[in-house]
Image (cartoon, rainbow, N blue to C red; front, top):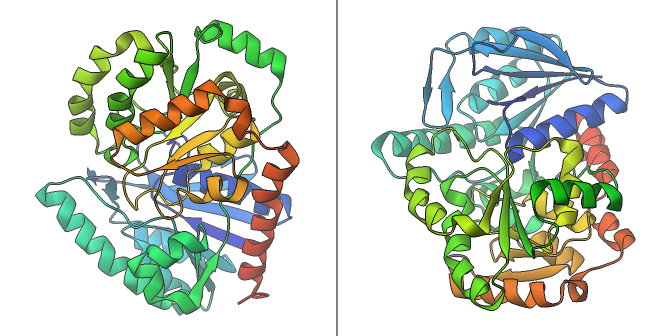
Length: 381
């Protein structure tokens, strides 16, 4: 079967959505399907066409960026050409082009799946609010036209205004969690290289964007430092030059400078180094603040590395801790509750650990890929 994935940003861009789409594409390729990704050529240095890990990637030229999106006047022509040569279409939303792709998919008689990653909440500002309002309308059109809508879990689906409106179409599929086994020797080597080997460490892996709640982790830090003076927070991810988040980073700078002695920045690590990063941390923090976060792939990966997680009590975000029992859930926006949970877990991380087999069963990627495959083939629904 030929399967088309459509999303705004793909590799080398790094976000939870792009990682999700990449893992899904690779998983379907392993099952013997031809998979194409149609995306934006968001930087002129990127090739218009290439094959990455046996996945065909076609990039549409852009004329400008608006907020976190892009403007691609030629997109409908690219989309029509690709839909015509594929059997099924998977749309990764939110994206401005979702409604057009769904309409073209129906016009060509293709099976249309809408993977709804989150209810997007953009930062304040007139342009962002216009974009958010437009996205809401386009997502509803795409949802109406789609045969099925994939959500990260039932918990998130029950909370989303859009997903509850189309509940008969919603199919919960756990995001695809793929992580190599932890090598203790490599953990020790990299922890030494990163300067983490002799310090209790709180891990954080995400873009620096407003919905991630970095400021609340920083506000929790003094209370943790008062009890554990040599504690540090290790950041990895695309925290530099995050699209649409320049103002947010500027707001963070005073706190980042204030607590600089307790912060370690590791830039963007390679996929193969992430298990060692999680293994070098005693606790992993997910401090998301709103519905833009719908699950949190990184926290499941941390659990598979044996590292417990403190996560905010939001639909979807709390799901990995609920399933595995490997951590604590705290209210969003509450730096004191976050600090107390971090201290409890740093004092006794072993109390929160579960056997690897138990955690792996909670996040089996082959089950997720099979469910996608069935939907594309029309076997389920």
